[in-house]
Length: 535
Image (cartoon, rainbow, N blue to C red; front, side, top):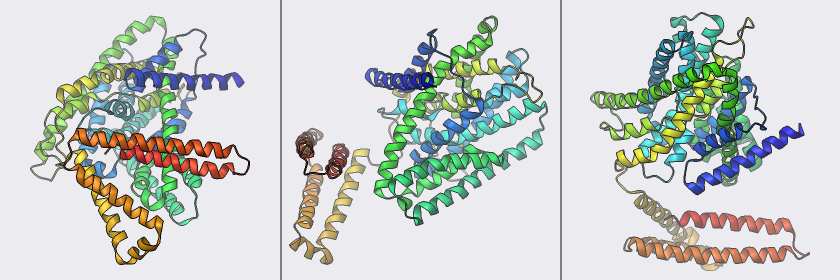
């Protein structure tokens, strides 16, 4: 037991080191983690990792999907809902069907049911990989919104296909009419269960006396309860988590105070990072085990199948994204769309951002080891190897070349008439104007005259507002110089205050809890300063 704990601690340290290396060499960390996992897994002395297939979905998927739902902008999701829905359902079904046909025709002994099983596993792109690569790259907001939005729904649709394909392989029968009916039942009732449980958590957050710690704990209970209740009734646990997460995320300002939001954000950021890190590392670590189970005599054939299917997955997605663009142009003649001229450049970027990752890995590893009659699950190792090949090829090849594709095919932002800098400037001016208007109004002005703290607040807003107004007349270089000086001096002031607090903490007459309170306030002030420095 102790050796196992030490092994996982070592893996976590390796993950942290590899992520820091990725930042140093400016490569998306999922790519570096996968390569690192392959290298570590190839070391003979490293023990094999054997994770229960049934535990994969329950351990990893609920929190990762819930975190993704909270990070998704409902405003952007709704704006691009039609194109997101087409990517999440239509393209996934098309991809799964084509992969089923190709694998059935290509691989001896591969049935259509096994083909749909493989297609369901490898059809959903991974948003974590794409968004990590897109960070720091100037790309239209709609591209990011579509990629993030489709990832929430295509996970659900692909796993529904996966569920039906597993059932067909296990039972040896498949009825298309019954499957279509069950498909909609699973999706609709999964969504309803997620929303129902989200309403319960909404009520707890809103009307019971929770604290920041309780709110954070509830945020971890929510995804697991949504997923397991939905799965208990044999409907989509993935859609339950996604729908419930989107509902609560869109109402977080109603149910959480600032302390709860700040604490939950920090905790989830760390937990999501660790979970994603382990999953991407697991992709590399598991491959030697899969190769061993496949056998040396079939490895050459399996590599060929994996590369052909990987190429087919990439080509199908690129064709489908262009088809979705053409369909949008056609349908915009009859209904209102968010963008009636999407063009061909952005669809290429969205299509090339279709790296496979977490969901495909979890689905592949969750394939049962045996059938109901006790016989080994047919072609399980082949499905696993092809899945790992598709993940590796798309993640490494497409991931490393995506910045270059964006450079070639990127286009100016067309969704917002104002630049991001101009939007921020106007928002801040509006906020300062509202604060000054309130403080200068009759009910508050009496406090300004007799309360030094309120007067200082007014003077602070007046000073910040004067800079924002003057910013309109400054060049970018002049504004940057002013902000740089302000940031430098304010940071030095905060650091000096920290030193004073540490010296006071060394004296017996001061309570450490009280000192820590003011250290936390300085931390928040420095974070606010960092945000302001991005004016």
